[in-house]
Image (cartoon, rainbow, N blue to C red):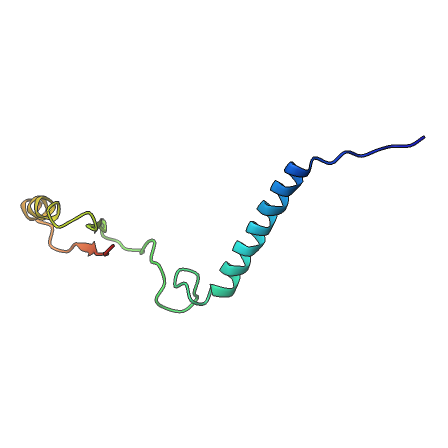
Length: 92
């Protein structure tokens, strides 16, 4: 008895492209892991939490959407007595 296998070329092509993209992405992350500070075992690295006895919270603001919105934030923080805040700046 003879059996024939029919392969859908379009689906096979999709799987090959997805597999190649995954392998390429993994290779880039592996090759560049020493250049990305989050993955680096040395300092500086991302700080996610800090053990402390005090009840404190860290506030960070991304004001890349413009300095107009920073004024109301600064006013609210001043009214609430917040003294230390970190703003992340970026440019287009």
